[in-house]
Image 1 (cartoon, one colour):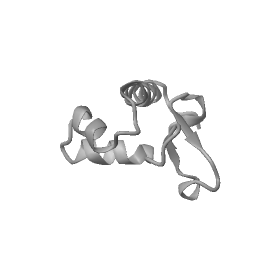
Image 2: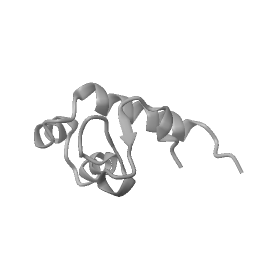
Image 3: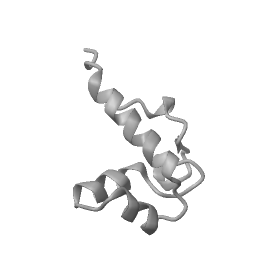
Length: 75
């Protein structure tokens, strides 16, 4: 499981989208990025469809997730 607390591009607030992780300053859930990419969308399309999200945020989220996948899970 990814530790999103260390990623500056996202935030989690209890009263915002039921506490889901969102791109900071938006109401766009981080999960929307992965769902769209899984469905075949490009990062450019995602940024076009969600104009509140900035390119640096998407890069930070993808880099953070890639790093989490490189580190073995702790028991």
